[in-house]
Length: 73
Figure 1 (cartoon, rainbow, N blue to C red):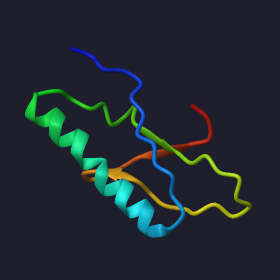
Figure 2 (figure 1 turned 90 degrees about the horizontal axis):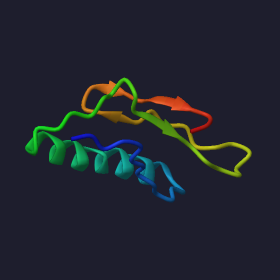
Figure 3 (figure 1 turned 45 degrees about the vertical axis):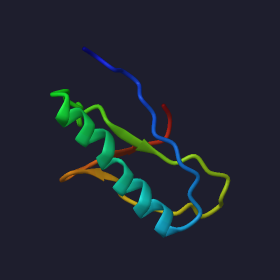
Figure 4 (figure 1 turned 60 degrees about the vertical axis):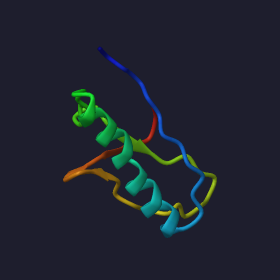
């Protein structure tokens, strides 16, 4: 079974929000592990959409893998 192009979205205004989103990403990973599905972490990326002149910076990760940050999807 394949599930392609899934998106997790959250409105984030603070670094605390960034940490919450990073923690929330572990839930789909746990679900996939339970159902013996694999997330291809080489194809998993993060993207920040903002109108801020100085966007918040944060490195998102799943387990020990830091997600590549991209500018477009």
